[in-house]
Image (cartoon, rainbow, N blue to C red; front, side, top):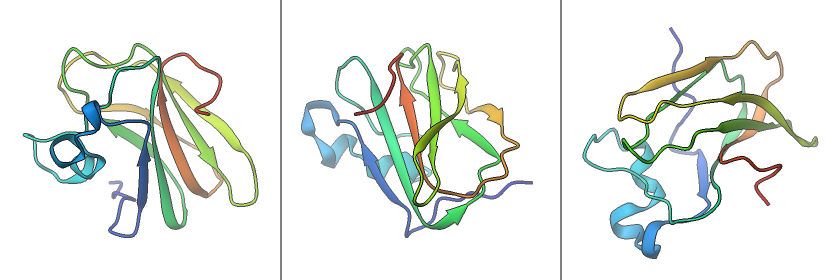
Amino acid sequence: MASSIICSETQSRVSSVINRDVKQYGKKYMFDSNEETCWNSDQGEFQWVTLEFPQSVRVSELKVQFQGGFSSKTCRLEGYVKDGDFTVISHFYPEDNNALQISFILTIQQRLKEITLVSGDISSKN
């Protein structure tokens, strides 16, 4: 069974917060284990979440949960190997419901220092 690679030292960044209301909808709600709270992005062509880990990690699967009615049709996971470039690890197509989804299981051998989940059909987050 896989364990979470998210810890108190994991740094997160997000593309936006709805109405810039970080107290009610900020990124801190992505990992608080409370079904009543969530990060809400603002409107835009694409959104992204970046996680930077305190040390390199091996990612084996991705579990995501979208608020029903608000998921993107296409997403991708990018990874950053220390002193390397971001590379696309996988594309996935989430279900538009409120269920916890295992989007894919990875068999990559590289250890990653940072990952970015991008929603929308774009070539990069910047």
